[in-house]
Image (cartoon, rainbow, N blue to C red; front, side):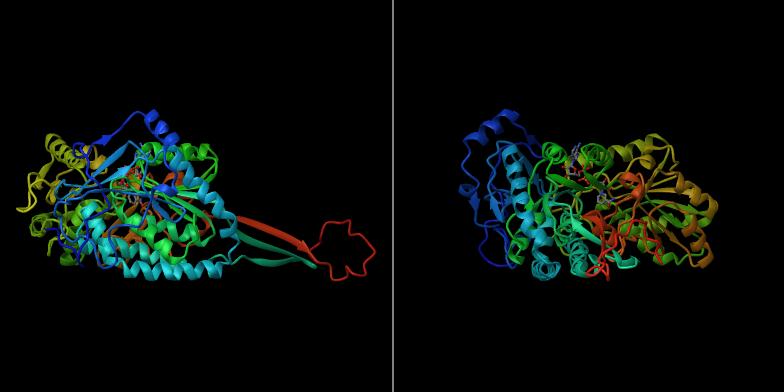
Length: 565
Ligand code: NAD
């Protein structure tokens, strides 16, 4: 029997499928076109909501008996896709099938665009105060559905339930900050000449799109949904095809919060859906978060098509540890930030730069890492769960093997680990690789798993030099008790988000997510959330108007340029 928080649910939103684990069943594209032409209308394929509710949702990794397909979301309705192409989604802790995610057909993708286009004129005409009221409701609903969202993340993505709650929280905070839209959308006004004023306005762009990664299934959709909509745009969001469940719950909450039909739509799929978004003329802007391969492609093709694109990419985050730091705080911080979420955070602290004698602390770091409990995310006391897929596990293990071959030392080896109750999951225990040099594959590539690579240097200056030579620049941390040392590091380091005795310095939404270098496309000109997020989703308009005080009686035309007197 499958356990639920409340009674009587038939599992997630899914139907049985025959394909092998992790495989995409790709029928020829013409099949879906044929299917489109004969398809029942969207209205006929509407389904009445999701299987889970705020008080009733999966709380274990038990096999789902009646697997259902994930619907897409258009016109404020959940719709069953008419596609013949599905992507199987497996619980990373068991590799049991959870749902099938459709590769939406071209007609379905087009329907989402048409829905958003239709909604835009009325939505942009609503007052910001009206949109703020909807955002207040959306925030309250996310709070009400917090555990349900987290449970969906644990089931589909694998992270522990507690950590999944944090995933939701960081997105919720963006929605809360978006409630300050009346303040953030205020323009400026200045009298620039006698009787002449210039005013600036921030106007919505129209239909915009977001393409999301697998590792934060709630937070990253929530980097876009609140800000895109509160600024007056209509959004088409593509969650990761590997874990769209949390985004689908957010779609339901958007509907309940009172967003009009078409303001928020959600579509599914892999590359084909991305290419559709990139080439669809009605879409004016794209927010992307994910790896460099996809992100660089999306940034260049989207930009070449005349769209605004913001793209947060991969990372290799370093921690410099100085001998004068609080050793216990450092060890707890590095162990939490390297191995938490199985290292699948873009701000995971995956690279340790040990200055001087701090390299002697490594055995203690390894001891504490060893004590972490690797288990199913719903299990009490689990510190980290599995990695997302069998393919990802294989890739991570091959990087660990390459380090061995290149002469590094595997101080702690998590390969081969399996929790007793979950023999079929994608498990890797905490792994520590020491004596690493910058030329090794394990240093050059983003690993995105529970693996900490350690390098040794002799001084603060050397640590700064080494870190700055790395092509990524998302986050960095320094551990020291010295203000001047921290200040020198802060001033000279090139990473975009710096933690001083803080392992994962992700800024809250009153600031912005400020990666640097190869970790953000376009030189970091456009960052997510905060005031820059509002700028991304709005077009500036300046209006200069003259209302001559003497106009009513003036008979004389002004022929000279204004003199500002
Ligand atoms: P990914 O790049 O594989 O996928 C992200 C999205 O792009 C998905 O929706 C996917 O469908 C699509 N996609 C993937 N490959 C594509 C291709 N070749 N063409 C078109 N579309 C494609 O990323 P992921 O594995 O889901 O997420 C992990 C990556 O995301 C890591 O590199 C991590 O550092 C990065 N990330 C960065 C940040 C940040 O803010 N910098 C935040 C979270 C994750």
